[in-house]
Length: 173
Image (cartoon, rainbow, N blue to C red; front, top):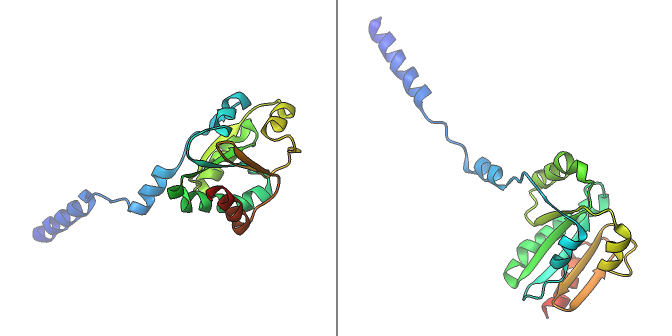
C-alpha cells in the first residue's frame, strides 16, 4: 500500500512539475499583436506622402466602418508582402474615429493580422487635408495614393487585386 502511495506521489509530482510548452503558433500570434496605433495630424502625415527615396509607396485611406475598404484590405496586404523585395511599401491610413482606436481599430488589426504599417489620421480640418492630398478627392473612402518620388497617381475607388497590381506595375517599370 505504501509502495502504491509513493508511486502515485512520484507520478503526480512528475506530471505537475512538467513545464507546459506554448505552441510556437500561439507564441507568434501573441508577438504579432499590436497595442497602439500612431495618431497623426495632417502635418505629421504629410512627410509620409512625399518621400523622395527609392521606394514605391502605396498609401490606402480606409476605415473599419467602410465595407469596401475592409473588403480590399487583403489586396493591399498581399501587395505589401509580394512586392516588398521590389522596394514597395504599403501604408494604411485609418480614418476611424479617434475615440474608437482601442475598441475597434486595434482589435480589427489584430483579428485580421494586418502586417502593413497602420497610422490614424486624426485631423478635424478635412477641407484642408483632403484637397492637399489630391485636388480631385471628394473625401470618399476607400482612396489610394501610389507614388514614387515625383510620380503620383490618386485613385478614389475600390480595388480588386489584379487592378491594384496593374496600377502598381506602372510604377515598377
